[in-house]
Length: 186
Image 1 (cartoon, rainbow, N blue to C red):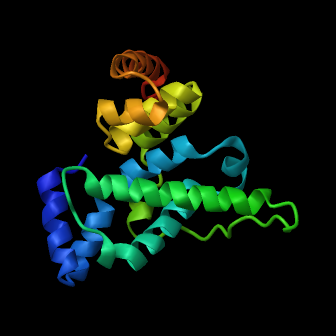
Image 2: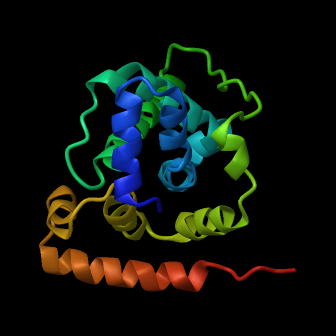
C-alpha cells in the first residue's frame, strides 16, 4: 500500500493541475482497488464484467469529480475511490437486473494505462481467489477495514455489531484468508 504522505503530496500536486501527479496518484492505488472490486463483484456481475472494466469506469467518474474531492485525513482517497466503486457496481447491477432492458455486457476493451501494469499480478490473483472463497461477512469485514480504511468502530457501526464482535470477526476472517491463499505453484 502506498504511504499516505505520497498520496497526500500527489493529491496536492494533482489539485494544482499536475497531470503526471494525477496519473501517478491513481496508478499507485490500482492494484488494491482491483482486489477490492474483485471481492465486491457478485456472481451475476462477475459473469458479465471484468474488474478492470469497473476500475476504468470508476476512474472516469473520479476524474469528473476530482475537483470536489478534498483530502481530509489518512485513507480518505482510498475511501473515496471505494465509494465510487460501490456506486458503479450498484449502478451496473441495477442495469443488468432491470426487467425491461435488454442485457448487454459492458464492452470488454483491452485495459490500458495503469490497469494493464497490474492485470496479471500473481499476488493479486491469489488474493482475489482467496477473498472470493470467504463467507460474505468475513469478506465484508476485511473490505471495510483494509480496503475502505474504516476504523474498527466504523466497521462495527456499518455491520451493526459491537467493536469487540468486529475484532473477533476480523481475526477469524484473516485466519480463513491466510488458509486460502495458495503459495506460488511453479
